Image (cartoon, rainbow, N blue to C red; front, top):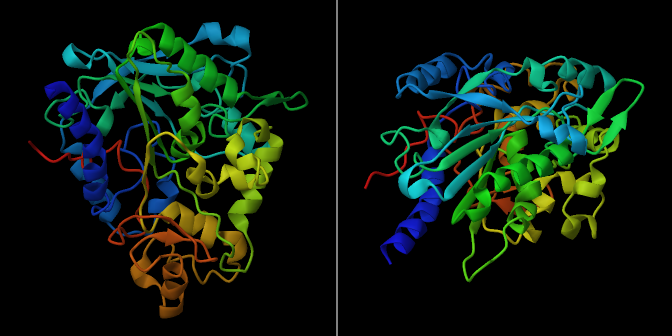
Length: 393
């Protein structure tokens, strides 16, 4: 009875953590982590807030670094990074009562939608395991510290590195440019490997992801649950947490266009994503729409929690007011600092909020709930110790 109550408390805690987190401004991922540069450009022009937040994160308990594991066996299955190198992950084993509990975190880091972008990505850690850090810090919900992460520190914690460019969903090869779009195979091979080293006997598992990894957690949530089957009267509790992964399909940007939809359309076409999207979505909508979480979440059967900022600076910059849609520069100085927005600009941003603080598209359909307290400094939260502060017992 106690074990069951404790497990229920941990899952309920995710909701409480998210509510607390959303009241604190924070950028995407902790400085020094692999995701630190994902939204670095988004923090420019935001004053000293970003620096203060990084100092606060640094003041927390030092994160333990976790060595990389190169999954060479996956190459035989065609599961390779964009440059053809093997996929990789980092694993910090659990202990005690956490031996049969797992967190699998999908790394984020944007996408690529054309030859130039993918070529750049191929020559970085986002496209090659040869260029990845040999060890990375685990903080926030991935921390080993009981003081910083009292409810999950003793779980088995895994971060799967991101090196394909389509949120672990691509399937194809560009022979001319020598790009391997094998995100789906990386996902499948790595999860099966983790099952083989102990995750198959887990009592409870949590799939998480940050930013592009948060999108991946949404796209793969039900598929993740399908890896776990009831046996001998026992079953595995499977849930998902998408952190800053709900990218909005805005029906109009500041120029009247649909910038992010065009970008996503290119990704889906270039990397062969369509066959790997949730079938419940593709049965009724086009593939590009099904790369947007807002059209996928209603069909997800696995319990999932969506953690998103009310004002996510990346989405304001790249979806609502990208430079291409703002040739006059009217939004340029305001995209990272909403206090500088004019009254009409604030009305435009607030047009995506529902009356109860939820976010909606321009058709007025409520998509998800979040806090309106977060400013343009929004991004993913769970990797940060400064904001991942579970309620104390």
